[in-house]
Length: 125
Image (cartoon, rainbow, N blue to C red):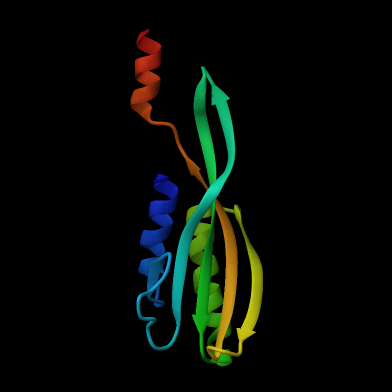
């Protein structure tokens, strides 16, 4: 698991919004979020191996009260910026009639940095 993704999950869980990875068995009352790592977005190869990889994922925020929109969105975007820098974007905003919730989705990218030990072993050869 990319360390940057793990840091994002930990930071989102420290916000005022309850967050889970990939989904909830039973969704919480009020606002809640889901964070998911979805696919490999790009790679850099070297020495017959992947030297560096980028991953893409999403953060989904669900909330019932339109009046909470600004504070909740600001808090999540501040967290994304803190961990992912500028490697994120707002993907969509919508109202889901079936659930009665507003839904905001962001896409983000994070890096999977190569292990320091792998570099040390390569240098020793």
